[in-house]
Length: 181
Image (tube, rainbow, N blue to C red; front, side, top):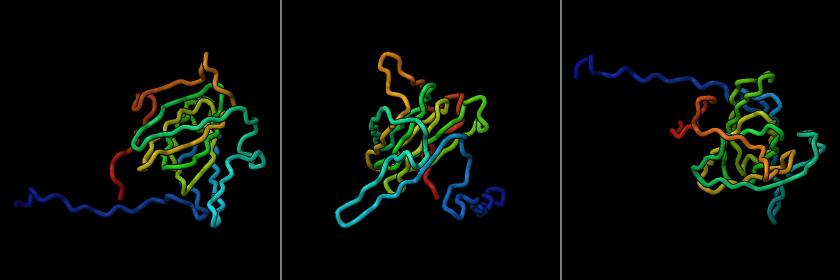
């Protein structure tokens, strides 16, 4: 093999900071998105996990409606946007990667993409405000479940749901199927 055919050496790449000393993630965040990590209380019988308490201050609107969603392994849901409601989502089981895109013109985080992962080892209650696109992928090996406690009950005759395909030309984000390091 001649020198011209020898590939250049692969140089190591230094990791960037991904977490702060308090355990919170470093990265872009969307204004008004709230993520409250929830830890189960365990004993020899099993566990209990609180889903929502008004004292937490996560959201000030009352609970009016609740439903459960399941996402199969390797499958996606979204992109979805609501104009009249905020979603308050509680993650129960499985491993989900969420992607959010802020398209609100007056938001200080307009144009920002935020991603995070939740699982039964890292449960969370999180708020997605109206006007923020959201999509989810099950990156685990089992069905994944979450409960939505939206600020508005579903109106069957006039759903507050707008959809975009994955991928699309408005949101520059793609779920990564490549293996990690």
